[in-house]
View 1 (cartoon, rainbow, N blue to C red):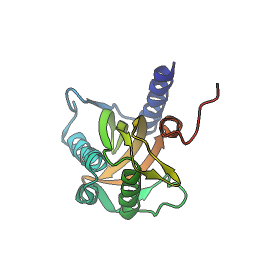
View 2: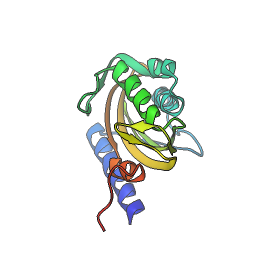
View 3: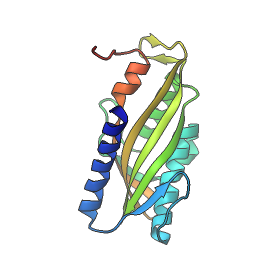
View 4: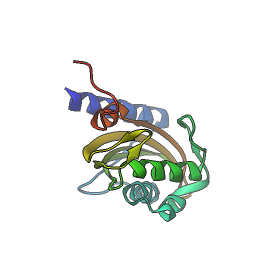
Length: 176
């Protein structure tokens, strides 16, 4: 049921993206890459570079993928706007999950936007606020929608599965 709900939410997000764009989407998956045109390839490269940033923590990749005028349209409270906000978010998350990896599982491209499902994995062996990890396995997904212009991500809307993450970190517990 949980996997079905996650798949439904991703399809709903992508449907919204395709509906507002008014064009056909080029598909991407981890097995075959995109099936789109050169414009789609530029978008795929920017999104892929940004995913590599989350996978590695290499700040140069964030600066390469994100526009200088990058805007996080779903900015969490307390996070700085722009490129520096994304970089600091990665640093803080890596304090809790030092071996964090991020992989693109699915991407749909329409006009100047990409809808992406990312899978984050690692072990909660660091510190998250006042909670110290004990090596708990972390495995959760996020859905992002990016706007890309001239090969750089200019805007990001994102939704992370924090309930799964915080349950795995034992910060919250699921009701029985």
